[in-house]
Image 1 (cartoon, one colour):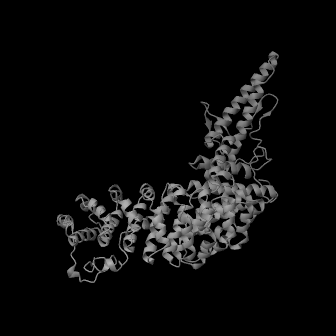
Image 2: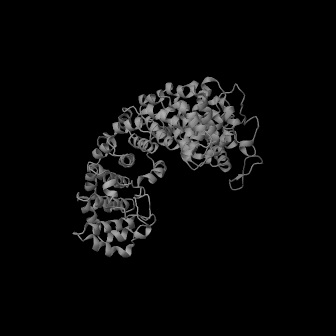
Image 3: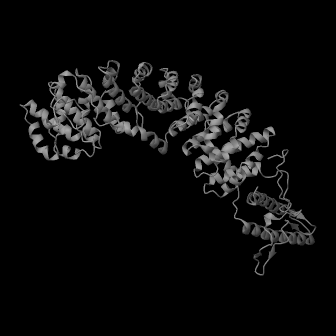
Length: 635
């Protein structure tokens, strides 16, 4: 190893011997002859002089920090306890609660959290018969049998006219045209004039229309307009205006299109934030939602209601389990019976939101026997299904050992090689799959055995650590680390055979301090097992360039990394049994000496003159700094 590492280790021994020497002087008998006292004083002065020269030389060569091993171990144990179940069963596996993971998780969900009413289903006969003149610029929004010439495009400049039409209570057609005009303005794809519409005071009128059950088409248009407002940054305005109770009531409307549009609007509100989601749940929206799922009028309504339900399940802090638990059997039934891929995707995302938490939440979801169905759905190969399924199963295996075993028994491990190595597989799928495997690897020895039984799993994980995308490499590193720190000796030796040491060493030069510590933990555990079983794993670390990397980590700005690196170097790469005679104090009969190099001289003013050769490079018989890496060495 480098001279720097040797110097740190030797300085620690040097300080220890100096302290021992000083204690010897302090414990000397109080009564001595004058000649004896004179001799002791002479030796003391000589020793302290040698101490000053020696320590000055060491510090001029390199800046060192005294290593407090007890503090080191306390800090590392505390860190490990928060990371891995193998070290603290109470806080077993990692949860996805930190900000970076949540942001990544919401990247996809943000797209689906709110949808503008751009694909409203074709209204049924009662509504379609009176809306033949509505040919919106977005043709999918509503049916139209009239030409573009018959359709009027409204702008914010027409708001006063529309407000006048809206207040003609005696003319239903005028009121309908006004509401439709506002809805058309709000249906613009880019920068709809929401502020202008809200500032004119139309919101109370729209909500009043929702409560009017005499005109289903007018309700439909008003609900459509509110849906588009709720899809913008002004969602809270819809809630504060008191629309939610009326929208919930519309979920029980005899008209399927009104039910679907109200569910859509409530989905936009629930998807805005946890606060508004709870408003929707507290207004008892869940029961009529589930009724529409169990008795859907058409596929379009079912699809939109399931999507809205998924928004009622998502968000942090999570909804109270008792409040949302009634939807679990309904979602499980859909998972088993539905053939609609879009519906299955929303169901799986809903289950992933509900199972992201403690063991109680996980058990509530697993009790509905969804794990076997999800594992089977992986064979369908639908790309949009894989991510939510792996996320949900990953949540399951982050629970108790029994919950993890239930998923393992479903055969999930056998599915992972294809998920990790299929050409063109998305990065997020490989990342989530490695995360799932890392949680299994943090389980029992039986569960780690199950990983090894799938022969290609470990080789694929090791390959991903060295050649995968960075986010995938991090999660794959956790797989090896959990096995190395929590598995038995046979498991540790098994990952070494798959090339774990080289893979872990490749992580030591990355900028992510957290994952560097994970890799160091794994290497320390591997070296410990090697020492215990007589396997010279230190040579493999050396061949992988790991020694130099660990030495460089002694200069890392993160103190935990520095302490861990020094600990590994001292424990496994410092020649045991080779006493450094250059530091050992000796008595030449007249004074104690500390073996300072003859090349070290004291200058005119007591300063140290530069020696011809650095202290740590001297290879004299008095300073044997040799390290033997033969197969029979002990590290």
